[in-house]
Image 1: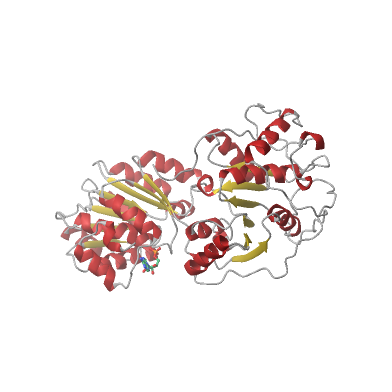
Image 2: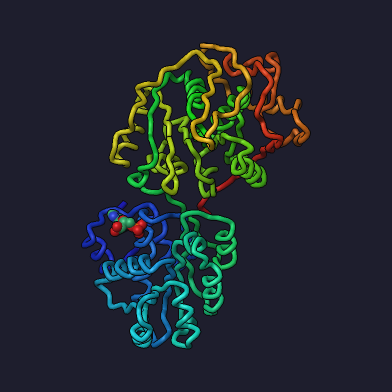
Amino acid sequence: MGFELLGLSEPTLKAVADAGYTEPTPIQAQAAPQVLMGRDILGIAQTGTGKTASFTLPMIDILAEGRARARMPRSLILEPTRELAAQVAESFEKYGKNHKLSMALLIGGVNFAEQEKALNRGADVLIATPGRLLDHFERGKLLLNGIDILVIDEADRMLDMGFIPDVEKICERITKKHQTLFFSATMPPAIHRLTKKFLDDPKKIEVARPATAATTITQKLVEVGPRDKRKALRQLLRTEEIKNAIIFCNRKRDVKEVYASLGSHGFSVGQLHGDMEQRDRMETLRQFKENEIQLLVASDVAARGLDVPDVSHVFNFDVPGHPDDYVHRIGRTGRAGRKGTAYTLAVKSKLDVRLIEGIEKLTGMPLPRDEDFSLEREKRAPRKSADSDAKPVKEKAEKVSSDEAEVEKPQGKQHKRAESSERTPRGKNKPDSARSGRPQRGRRDSHPGMAPDDMPKEPFVGMGPHVPAFLSGPFGATKK
Ligand code: AMP
């Protein structure tokens, strides 16, 4: 997709071409047309995704019409630091070079008089840090009732730096109806509350970090036979030092199956997919965040838009159908400079070969094969953790070894079995059996169609007291 499809003007497109960009980044492709339509935006994206251009390019075109009046800027961009504010100002110069827009930069460490002059000339675009902006406002040098577009950038950094009260004050002083573009890399509760208060039916756009930024993630590709995937997954779960992990499947059906299978093997696991109701998804997520469950089996859609904390491992049970999803999935680990590991299970099929090629093309690097991996006889071999935080995934006390291949079973049957096993819940938090999907201990003969490999043979250990409930209903879609 080219920039020309975004609805930008010719002079802006020319500036973009001069900047050397040939294709919009995902956030640019999604945000720019919506901004041009006047919609509020909630962008979950961090630096490096091209988010600056995602708001500056359409803003330039919107502001091209009309003129700024003295001390009444027409748009305001709030940035947490001087450096970021200066970078955004540079972007405006670069992308707005074919327009005659006026700009003022209000940041600390620069004298007030110069800034006042710029305000007095009238600014189409005012770029500021919150503290300095309020200083000018309180001195009566600035009016905020001409603002048509407000951008709050890097909101979570504003939170870290204690700027949220200032941001709220500023938002409250913009009395005129305006468009708000809000960006944050993460969505902690304080930020979520802010978006609820100040955004009007926003278009939510979430993008992964660019593949090149994922340097803290060790990526590995494990090639297995189509019938060995679950076994390979279990082997990895037992041998890797896992603090917590998300296991992605391409289909809801597989999410349910892998969840039931891991549960039957005694792993501490929850599931997240589009057939669950909001409250059950939130409960599962709470359990995962609070380390009551260590593994979360999820579909892409269900996991999108979630404020999942950093996880030590991501497993792609299936090679994702879109390379973007791969980047998105693995971006759940290795956050904020921490180390993370992402395993992808692939079978030797034409489809998987093609999908892996697509990922390698997007990330610009080969997906390293894990040459050391070979399927072993299945037995319990939890490693002692080197890192006090990391511990082997909770699993039942002993697993009878079995080399039997897993048999893929029809979904309906197995899911039903998982549900039927709910009727013998353990622990005091007996769930509503109609809703709970937690794999429970079951008798061998209660799983007549299960592969021997998948059947529970020992009582579970290591399960938390909470039993998540699972329902049906869409979740996490970022689109309206
Ligand atoms: P940002 O996430 O806005 O900080 O942008 C990160 C970097 O990506 C900056 O150096 C931009 O110049 C660059 N950039 C932004 N959009 C594109 C694009 N469409 N193609 C190539 N580079 C881009």
